[in-house]
Length: 280
Image (cartoon, rainbow, N blue to C red):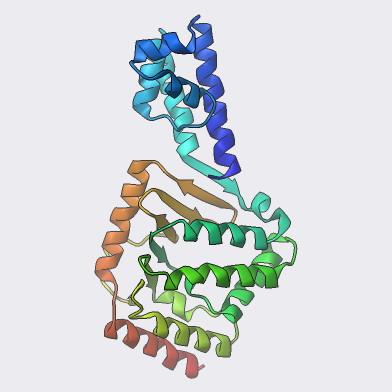
């Protein structure tokens, strides 16, 4: 969990404790009213457990303050859709973020993802990654630790070869035509993608230009083990762990998947991008 998330959950816990003490209740008394183990009250107040909306309704009733339930649930929604400032994340450069991603991917068994404008970092060549990270450091005006960040991003790719892991990734064809790097580096990136098609742990789909699509998401997203969705914008990163949000992104991924080309069809889309690249 992120530091931002822990702080937000801790802040919710402080408010819960205020309601309990304001009602003149001990933790054990509130637990008895809610028919919970005492440990649950302690965990919620100390930010060690994330409350559900039902928990907050019960807490408010237990404290004889049902009118507080909506405010508590508003706080919960802010917690579940927690935002990490990219400026703060990048204050020490891109390397630390890439290192954190290495850990996150190692702890994840199944990833489902969609990218509309860029080749996913999980599939990038060093030269392609280097170009992107250099541009990002320039635009964010952050420390230049590009080589360390590239090395960390390449370590993340070790999970592609771990038995039992699944990487189900969809890319819109438009991402193949963006040129953040030299033509030579992009051609090598196409080779990399072609080599991943058919890998046991990888399912790479490409949504062709002109394919019928039920919806057109405006941003990429990554779903980790059906428990967390990560979305990156230019200035922030969203980490969504509310089950309803995770299910929503899962349904969006399913719709995109129905429009994606796989196997030989995906190779044909790559070949088309190669021809356009060669034509200049």
